[in-house]
Amino acid sequence: MKTLISLMLLGFLETAGYHLLAKYPAPGDDGWDYLTMDSPNRRLFISHGTKVDVMDADQGRVIGEIAGTRGVHGIALAPQFNRGFISCGQANEAVIFDMKTLAIVNRVPVGKKPDAIIFDPLTKRVIVNNGDSNNSTIINPADGKVTGTIDLEGAPEFAAADGKGKIFINLEDKNETVKVDPIALKVEARWSLKPCETPTALAMDTATRRLFIGGRNKMMAVLNADTGAIVATLPIGERVDAAVYEPSTHLIFFSNGDGTVDIFHQDSPDHYSTVSKLTTEAGAKTMAFDPQTHRIFLSVAQREGRTIKPGTFHVLVYGY
Image (cartoon, rainbow, N blue to C red):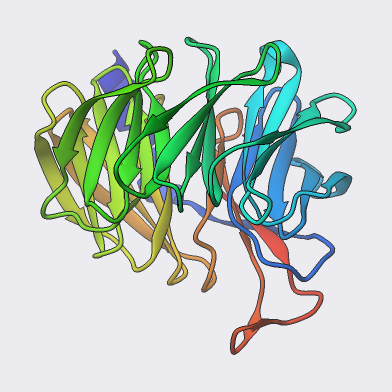
């Protein structure tokens, strides 16, 4: 039944297709990185230089702001604790905020240049990947305290939880993915991603135990999370930075800095087909997904050389 539903949805998507639905402006002319969707509460958290913009995901209005987050990269949400966590790359800290009021409640020192950050509901741990200290800081959201650090022996990029207590992390400079235990604070496995190189984006299908990895050599790879074997590769755009897997349709999305989003379908755990390539805007390399509406959100601004053109920062919304 799941396969039939997936094929029906895929047929619909191939006919209607993902297309641009809206452009939502947001104030400020700083850089940006990850976006995080709070689907139940219809809020989109947008990293934006020294602050996090909080946007109504349906109306496109900025409804709040979390300031004082210098060099913000990512936002992780732990709703069962009413806490959010922000990685601040220039301050070497994780900022903890109240999800209801958006007020900052604590600042926790972590490693050097914290970047990607996720919350794992099973182990109840926040994982902060520190790009310049080659490690991950583990935080207990119940009390906001650091429980330990995992030495990764490489520069971590994004991470994904498998729903069984393990975390998978891409090591960008080693062309590897590692499997870690955030409770025991240790690396359990280390796998080469060849021929996929400079891995950044990462998403996971926990049902089939498949990891979807985006490499900066314009290649996506599918990794068996139990054996570490590469089971499929396909070409993608340049400067990939984010990946999403949608279980209901078995679609995989990769957003790329060249202004494209590659969409693939999981035909079976080891077989994949290309659905489409969206044209977005140059620089729109990070992405959030809303499971309620099946929409994707990408943040971007226009540039004049390396300078951001004032008043051009906005969020692109694609759907069908």
